[in-house]
Image (tube, rainbow, N blue to C red; front, side):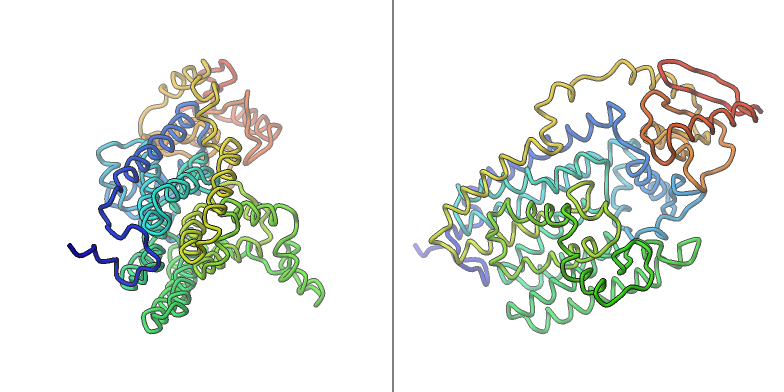
Amino acid sequence: MAPPRPLPGSRHMLDESPQAGIRWVWAAAALLFAAYGTVSLRLHQRMLTTGYDLGIFEQAVRSYAHGHLPVAELKGPGFPLLGDHFSPVLATLAPLYRIWPTPETLLVAQAALLAIAVVPIATFAQRTVGRHGAMVVAFGYGSSWGVAQVVGFDFHEVAFAVPMLAFGLVALAEDRWRAAALWSLALLTVKEDLGLTVGAIGCVMVWRGARRTGAALAAAGVVGSMLEILVVIPSFNPGGRFTYWDKMSASGTGTGGPQGVGDTLYHWTLGVITPDPKATMLLMLLAPTAFVALRSSLIWVCVPTLAWRLLSDNPDYWGTGFHYSAVLMPMVFVAFVDALSSWEHSRRHALTVAGAVAALLLPQFPLGQLLHLDTWHTSPRVAQARRILHQIPDGATVAASNRLAPQLTDRAQVTVFGFPGSRPSPQWIAVDTATPMGWPISPLQERQLIDQALSDNYVTVVDRDGYLLLRRRQ
């Protein structure tokens, strides 16, 4: 009997049968889905999620589910979310939200999106480095800190980009140009900056031999991003502009003002890896692949995301926090496997180091919470908070603390208490005075606003266990 034919254009395939022993891959995806979903849902059940960002995205999906363009009350009265970021892909969650209209819908969907990305990555790895090596790669991606940070911080639209990149980059690594292009173009529906990533994928495709397809894809990606940033978003934005330009100052000082030649050179050279959080993030990005990912041309796909983050004056973009590194995880792990395909003499050592690094990093990020007793304990204050919030009627306008907001966005019009530009004089105010986040206002400012509300037109309905519920007089 003739041996099974390899996939078109595949390189250095060890197990060429696409059906050979991949059931464990789906089992891994199911296990990751359970882990991701558990962490996210427990955070929400313990009231550790926030209006910024889970509440915002729920309001957007809720709008889509009712046949409207996305509006996020948390960003301002009637604020059109397409004027903030271009993420029409959120509309795909609308049917699920109609069935299960709660924030948990978004968290479960995010867990599924992040988990399914392991399937193309691990399957590609099995064809390239064998089953044992593929298991190391699956563990590395599944436990990666960039994915874990998304799981541990609300919901974000970039969850859609993770499987798109995984499927697309695997297709690119296997020279399946059409599939790579189609998966990449889908990124244009996720967020406006990802068109630049599409452009980078196109350039890599040109480098790897698909000149016409790659050039067309690169052009489509760059033009798509420019249209979204310069035309589409400003047309929806109340101020008629893309509001994130001020976070992308090239001055290196945060002011966007003039600077000397020396400062400019520093900002575009050493400024890319300083201060320390930048270098730390780059080190942690590559360490889980034993730095072998640098041997693959696919690693260049990381450049657009790293560029806008490292050249920004916003410190939140520099480190390993929040959700900003999620899209980098499939990039580095597919690049890792691609590099291993032509580096057979040190493959075992690289996989050993990669597995060890992944195991060492795992407890330091949100997936490690599965091993903490606190994760499985719900404070009695949470039950008290739910009883208090239950007194707010459906459809009411509410200003709530950031951690209380996503507990209400499925049935009320919610803003964050103290956030500039919020709806004035809401019908209800719900504040956690015992554990203030210090955002968007300080505890002192929060107390001053509460005193002002009580002296104006509000009465105290509940003041218990650090929770304060005020109602506007009729």
